[in-house]
Length: 168
Image (cartoon, rainbow, N blue to C red):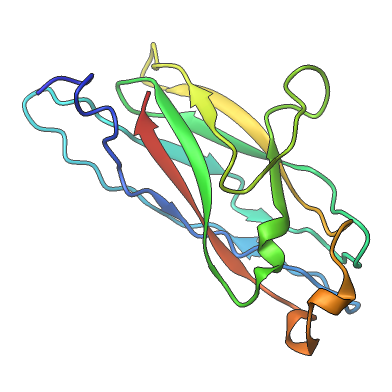
């Protein structure tokens, strides 16, 4: 069946981002890992992405503040245009529901979207080096009230984010 009928081919790309939050004097670094799964058969479209950097450090973040926006590069290495959606996979607490993505820092594409509501469209590659795009991610704790948290929510925390790529 054609690409139009199976536009929701999911490659199952899992990028483990361990977003570190630190309320003490330490900094936390997140490591990224990609597990790319694809099964192109008989000229079926291939979906493949590469995500970088290898680590992100949000640094110390206090309630009522936000981290700096950090650039995330996503390259479409497949054979079709794709939509990439970051989803929170797991975490020790719900503090990571405050991850926000935006396409650009300024201008018309600077609107921030909470994790789960952001989609990055990447065109079909025209060369073997893929089609590169980027977005920004930050942890925004401006509207988090300490009354909504308990002691276990403070300190060095981590969560996994899955970048899901679907045929556009």
